[in-house]
Length: 315
Ligand SMILES: NC(=O)c1ccc[n+]([C@@H]2O[C@H](COP(=O)([O-])OP(=O)(O)OC[C@H]3O[C@@H](n4cnc5c(N)ncnc54)[C@H](OP(=O)(O)O)[C@@H]3O)[C@@H](O)[C@H]2O)c1
Image (cartoon, rainbow, N blue to C red):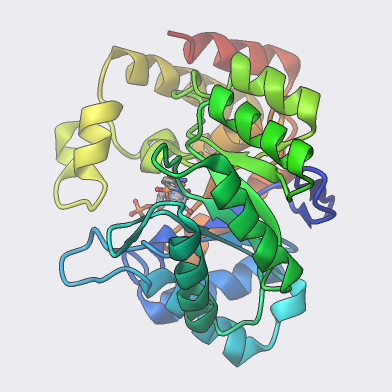
């Protein structure tokens, strides 16, 4: 399968990255391992997680997702065939991007992941209280020690990403090779505009999360009744059950009729075709869902379908 470069890191990913927040949350461990097997069997290679996943679930501490991945890596012995992307800064137990926190957090992630290196270690969110130099110097030490191959950022404003790139260049430190923003057919503003201009000029990879808007873009949530008892219900109801959501789903339905593909495949293929994007991150909770999503990588959307979708998701 065709690979896309993660910035200038030398690492590259298949056109879809698996979102690991579901491991140990909405996908139990056995299902998670089956999902990871199916993903690798399908020719894909990159898995995204974070130390904090899934601390928001009652009874969870955080670290559950990394631990599930770690046991899978150990059982399969596939470490060199996959890229492990994880993050630091958002775990209430280990918050922020201070040097001390990064140094402690990386050891926890390596232990849970049962590996000696992280392929892409990402700042999960900005930390205005820590000088940029301190954070990048800490990451630089991890890269030198071989514990981290490359670094990325998530949820940074274009201005702060730009400042960080400038510090890296001035001080000869590793730079953020990727940015992970929220981006999908519905949520467009974080990428289109300033961030797209900056990342294209600087050769920074864009690996957006929420490719399916938490499942809304699969078309399975259209009424309040569809949300009953669903783990994603509060997010979907708050953010997507509105006039714009109806418009986007109508465009997806039309595109599905025109192409014979599913709404989920179309939603992801639209992101994959976006000039600003390297590869979207999306999750699945069953192998059937995942097979559906992986089909997006083989889908090429006709220009008139792309134009319709572009128009529907505009505010
Ligand atoms: N950097 C950040 O701040 C940040 C924030 C959020 C997420 N992320 C990353 O992005 C990843 C993706 O986000 P996400 O998992 O929240 O949302 P998502 O990928 O937009 O939505 C995926 C969910 O949609 C449902 N789904 C997937 N395929 C389907 C199909 N074919 N048919 C029907 N339903 C389907 C599944 O949920 P159900 O089966 O439960 O319906 C699945 O868990 C995360 O795993 C994480 O790695 C990063």
